Length: 209
Image 1 (cartoon, rainbow, N blue to C red):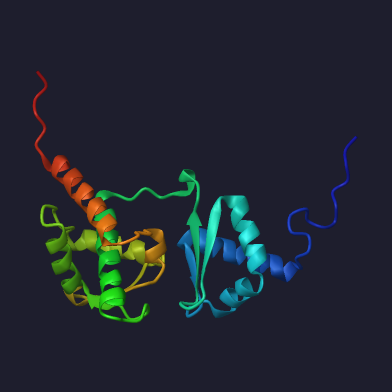
Image 2 (image 1 turned 60 degrees about the horizontal axis):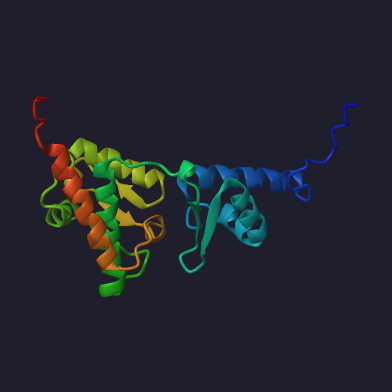
């Protein structure tokens, strides 16, 4: 016997048609970009805030954890299962590590606001080279690709310029949760491990015996 299809959707039946559209919009934003920023999506952010329990339940079904950064007016979706994680290439990973370090230093050591960490690509590359002096720094075209990727993932805002060195990077608060180090000691251990991996990759291959 075939059961009749109910008129009301089985999942979140309490939602109106308009609310279901907003949930779909929020789902796309959180899955594609990892977060929602009120400065850029005010109405969607406010809708999610007013339905926090619903967003938390939706995230649980998908294997995500929602972090509500109310002071920074940001909603972050963190994967809790390995299948949802995006594996970064080595140069992408060290770039994110360096950005986390610079953000932490500006906010924790120099008292900058979490929305005020801005610097040029020239300054960032210089610090990147000093942190990972055994690594080959990404080329200009590759650095542009990495920065555009991190911009799409709402970890930074990248303002391009004809001269890459003059382009600016604003680090967004979500970077603290995408790579949640407890402190600089943990950061240093991981940074050293990636530096060692890079050195191994650059060694010439030996002929098999």
